[in-house]
Structures are given as structure tokens and as C-alpha cells.
Image (cartoon, rainbow, N blue to C red; front, side):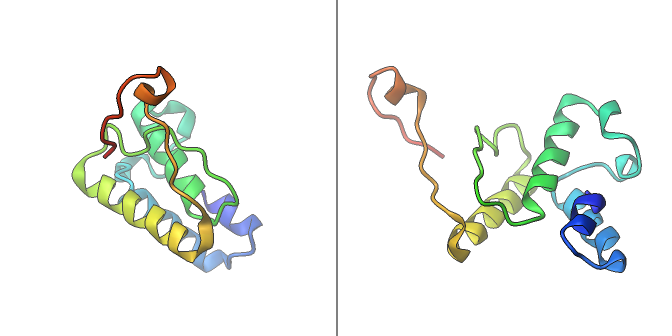
Length: 110
């Protein structure tokens, strides 16, 4: 994640702190912060991918149930970050539920 920040022009002294804040906010265990992501479990890889994606402003995000299987704290951080991106002109939060694709009745989205 620090590499992405450096490539985007973030100062070297700020990259480590920012990466650690995002790892912590997204529930990545501290003992994994310096490990190679390919050794992570699938769930840990998802957390790292979300953190790596959301640490920088993106022009387009396609997210498939990004809050699924997240604990309440991590879910709240993610929802706040997505709301911030939307409020700052970062896009729309349209969604399609499986029932709409299949022609069934609408069901509430969370």
C-alpha cells in the first residue's frame, strides 16, 4: 500500500503512517502488516484490497457487497469512507439486487 501512495506523490514519511492507519481501520491484523499479501487468507486479502483501493481517490469503483462478512467497526469505517467519496464528488451508489436481475420482487438493500 505504501508503494501506491509513493507513486501518487505522497511524502515518504507519510506513507507508512497512512498505510498503517488504513490496515488498522480495515481490520488487518497488526502481525500481517509487513507480511507478503499472497500469504494471507482470502478474508485478509479482501481487507487489504479494500484498504489499498480506498486509500487513494478512484475515478470508478465497482464493489460487490463490500460490507459483507465485515465486523461492525470495519463496516462503519468502510461506509464512512464511501460516503465521504460520494460527498466529495466521487460518484453514485447505485446497486442492483439479485431479485431485480431475476425479475423478482424488490427487497431492501442494507
